[in-house]
Length: 291
Ligand code: BDR
Ligand code: CA
Image (cartoon, rainbow, N blue to C red; front, side, top):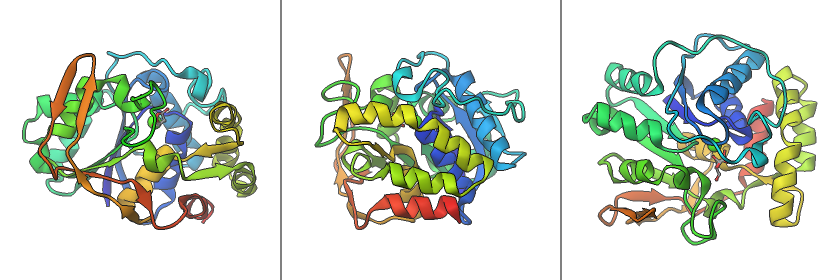
């Protein structure tokens, strides 16, 4: 499966990248970064650092929208990567994330699957730049939203969609097949400290770096959940895209994104919303990362 990842790397984004690199059916055609957990340039640096730790070269990484500065550093540490110093890796390419996404979609019509694990600014800008994008792209999977559960940014708002609600509304309203992976499902699939110990025992530089990143993430969620566990938001969206885990309840819903007085609506039956899975995803993700 050919995948363009749009991310705000971010600790769980970093885990998602590692998962995608480990999955035999995933080909990362390109990665764009967006402001969210940190700034888009820092997210690109983190992404390139993760690729370097994995020993992977040649995946184009493009810096995206700088319109919405990150504001959730408390969750992901000062550099977005839990304060862990990552190797410099390759340079970002000299094109924007929007240019990269549009180019990949044009070069691989009907084949490219878009996975968004950060705010939707790049995807919305790409829709404006190439109105045929919905015909060119095979599918879009967005980690974001809180449908029947409280938000994590505001009582009714999840961080990715709340960061750039106008962009989220445009992406959810475009005529392409969207799968939304909201907090309803991601908050229920977590790793424990023992899971991260098992990850560290994998022994590669990437296993060690990911394990070093997570203490700050554990701290944040322990305050929220009362247990020392971390939700697997972004890797879970990747696993759903790749069919590694199976949605148990994924109704087609009419989604309405509301923020700052702006509202966008879609017709009923247009967004597939994953609300639960048939099995715990934590062990599935761990097995892939250790394979
Ligand atoms: C989402 O927000 C970010 O903090 C995470 O990386 C994830 O993409 C969860 O709400
Ligand atoms: Ca993210």
